[in-house]
Length: 277
Ligand SMILES: Nc1ncnc2c1ncn2[C@@H]1O[C@H](COP(=O)(O)OP(=O)(O)OP(=O)(O)O)[C@@H](O)[C@H]1O
Ligand SMILES: [Mg+2]
Image (cartoon, rainbow, N blue to C red; front, side):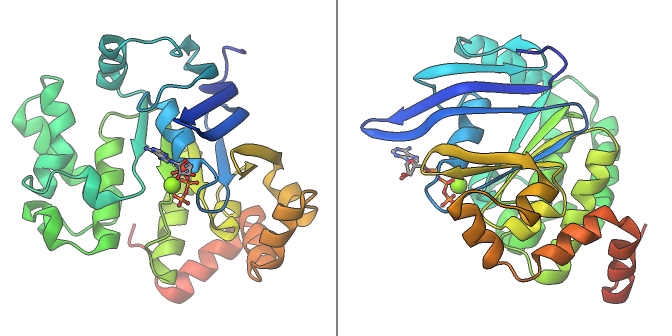
């Protein structure tokens, strides 16, 4: 495994009892690179994310994070790795991943307080992060149950960013958002990537992934059936399943074009009222 990759997965197999959820999956993410993983429901996308962060144990294969092999990590080593916050996983279901009894502010600052930072420093950082994910500061005192799905999703992203991760795994980060918020979120992920955070962007929607990812891997029934530069996947899909995805996403070519031409995306954002900077 090459050490300059932030994330390296090779020949990964995951079983849940008799279900063979991942078969020989190999994938790598370099510094500041955004890699998309697309696949239909049940294809193994969340399983891949969970394996990378140590929430499910692979039956075969290897995983390395920031040059360090984690495949045979024990619970204590996982705790230490999580404490360092190098890799952060934003769960598919934000309600499940937020403590219902903690306010937005408490959720966001928790990882910092665990690391021994002062309350004052943590509170400042929470303010900075909610602004960064375009959330109203007034929401800091709310409980997760008092937020919309899209707002909750931004809280989980803010919380993940609090440790300055080198790689962020986003599991269906825009599926619950309406069109305007989806464009805003995608733009935010592009900015993150441009600022050097590596992304593993998981979605069933090729159109969303194509706007952010440099490379795309197509997962089908637990196997990567195709991977390559985003543009090649969109413009010349090889596998039948990928062709189906491309064919069923009418806005896809324009999304890919927008990625190639940032100006076009900026204009689009201005038209629909993009985020205040
Ligand atoms: N904890 C579990 N126990 C048993 N089987 C599981 C478990 N989690 C997932 N599976 C099975 O593994 C396969 C892959 O599931 P996974 O959640 O990774 O799919 P996914 O691609 O994320 O789907 P979705 O798009 O619906 O989120 C599915 O067949 C699923 O039923
Ligand atoms: Mg999933």
